[in-house]
Length: 423
Image 1: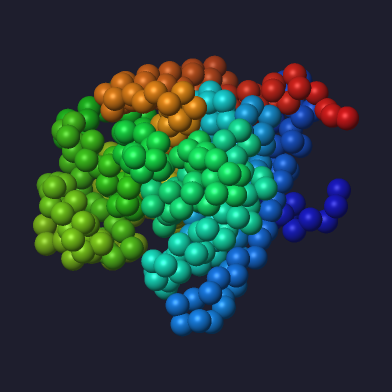
Image 2: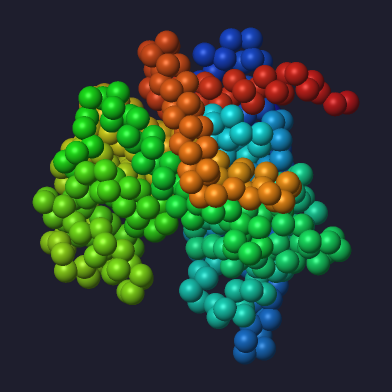
């Protein structure tokens, strides 16, 4: 085996975490285990240089990535993140998790992910547009409506998707609305897309709570990360009788054992860009968040937030992963040892990619659904996917994460086997 840098990563790095998850699944793959190495190797990793002219006339260079982990079941699907900590290894792991996620909910996609190592807050709007358009041109040779379909992720949004769609369309000479999802509604975006991931977190959390005989009425919910995912999930839980007892984002942490006012938190987020100064709760430290008693804990920030030491301390019944890869491998084992149910990211936050699939389908057909229709379809797919994963966990007496990987990886490797090898 070549001595590639990503083959032997540290255990709790994103790629190392993913590889350990694959290792746990192999014993349940039967005859498909002969293809398991497919899961451990990205199909394609593209690293691009992105030179742009800044507003002051100087030229700056940034590094960007697009990784296609597996395309056996369909075009690549996965977001684009702009963040100063983006690395190739992180993007590889996120692409791999997308492979499992799309298969676990039985969408006709493979897994992909992209990113640029940049703090977008340091750029003007015009600089950000130039960066996005140049990046899109650089990765344009491997993306497309039937090749690989990017979407928003950390620090990217509908406007950035519009720039990507326009750039790609200009380069191919025709309007290609299906090249990205998460677009503005007038450009072929889907109703319900903005809150889809948070809605999926709620639906799966509701199903998990029901199976744990936990009533949502009065249930205590703690949310780390109050962006699109965390805030939408919190709104839905609160709307169904739960109490949001703690919220943490990049500006601070607030706690109220009697429940925080969600409308007030949303207003604070809208007007101040964060909830750290919210007056409706007690301000506590970053680490104190993990000590707040709850019934459902939703890590909805970045990967690797719930490590071993925090896993030893959390006081909750269910960990509901709104973020991608928030729980490290050793933390996973600790939570299982403590009897805490972990609902993994590959099912818990699959609502976003599911509605992205709806958007892609609507763009191809030029026929658009109502938001109610989208929510009904989303709920049905999420409930059925969770049921299949729960039954697999029961059958093999394994954690939900391993069960989700068994379901997803089996579908991926069945497609690989059926297609055969070329040449």
